Amino acid sequence: MFGKSEEWTAEDPQIQTDRTILAARVVSIILFVLAGLLVIFVICLRKQIQLALGCVKEAARAIGAMPLIIFFPILQAAGLVLFMVAWTYYAVFLASMGDLVTYTYTFGPLDTSISVRNFAWDDIVYRCGWFLFFCFLWTCQFILALGEIILAMCVAKWYFTRDKSTIGSSIVLKCIYDATRYHTGTAAFGSILIAILQLIRAIIAKFQKKAKEMNAQIAEALLCCCQCCMLCFEKCLKFLNKNAYIQTAMFGTNFCVSAKEAFFLIMRNALRIGAIGIISEVITFVGRIFVSCVTAGLGYIAVSEMLRDELYSVAGPCVMIFIIAYFVSDMFMDVFDMAISTILQCFVADEEMFQGEERYAEGALASWVDKQEEESEKTLKVT
Image 1 (cartoon, rainbow, N blue to C red):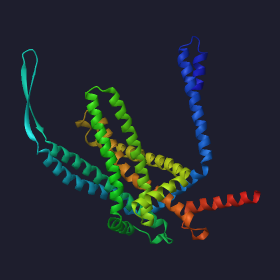
Image 2 (cartoon, one colour):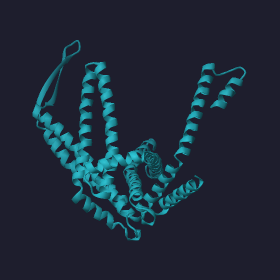
Image 3 (cartoon, rainbow, N blue to C red):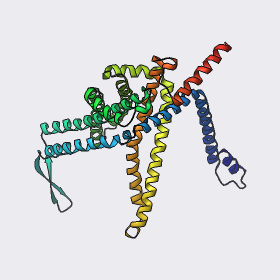
Image 4 (cartoon, helix red, strand yellow):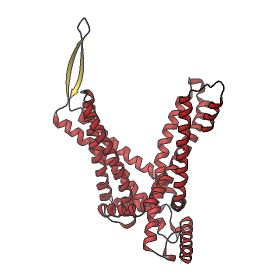
C-alpha cells in the first residue's frame, strides 16, 4: 500500500487526492508497525508456541487412539433434542394458559376498525415463563458442562497411561459412566452460574427494549454498558469453568476446589495458556472453514447435477449448506479444542508432580522437555 501511494504521488497529472494518498501511507505504516509487533511477539513466545504445537500433536494422538470420542457431540445433540421435546411441550402448555383478549384499533379518515385477538397472561404464568426459560438455559449449559468433563476425562486417562496401546474407544464409555455417576454435581454447579448470568443478560435485554420504546437514551447507554460487562464476565466464567472441569476430570475434586486450582494454574502459566489459546483457535477455525468449504463444494456438485433445471440459482442452497456445515463442524472441532486444553493441563501437572523418567510426557511434549533441559544445562555451564 505504501508503494501504491508513491505511485499515486508520481502520477502526472495526479488522479488521487492528497488526502487519499496520506491515508494510504498512514494505514501502511500502521500495518508495518503491527507486523513488527507480531514478529516480536512470536519471537518472545517462541518456547510457549513450541509447547502449544506439541499439545496439538498430542491431542491429535489422543483422539486417534479413541475414535469413538469424535462422535460424542452426536450424543450431546441427542440429549439436547430429547430435552427440547419435553421443554417445548411444557412451553406450549404454559403459553396456552393465557386468556384470549380482543383488541380493537381504529385508524384512517373513515375510522376503520380492526379487531385483533391475542393472549394475555397473569403474573403467575409470566413468572412461570421466566422459570421455564431459566430451566432451558441451565439444562443446555449442564449438557455442555457434562460433555466437557467426559472429554477431559478421556484425554486425561490417555495421557496418564504408560502403555497407551491399551487405550481405546472403550475408555469413552467408561468415562461417560464415571462422569455421570460422580461429577454431575460439579457440572450442575458450574452450569447454574452460567445460566444465572445469561438470565440476568436476558432481563437487561428486556429493559433495553423498554428503554428504546420510551426513547430513554441515557438508560439505553447505561444498560448497554451493563450488558457488555455481563457478557465479558460470562466469557471469563466460561473459561474458568472449562479449566475447572479439566481439574475435576484429572483429580476428581469438586467444583470449588477445581476452580481455585484452575485459577492459580492459569496465573502460573499465563503465557503458555495464552499461546495455546491462540494456536488452538486458529487451528479450529481453519478446520471449520475447511470442512464447510468442502461440504459446500460437494453440495454444489450434487445440486448442479440433480436440481439445476428446477432452481433459479444454486447459490442459495450452497450458502445454506455452508452455514449448516460450519455449525456442525464447530461441534466436532470443540472436541479437538477441549483435548488440546486438557493435554496442556495434564502436561503442567506432569511437570510439577514428576521428574525425569517418571514423567508421562511422550512424543512432541517429551522432545520439548528434553530441549528445555538441554538449554537450562547450557545456561548453567555458561554462568
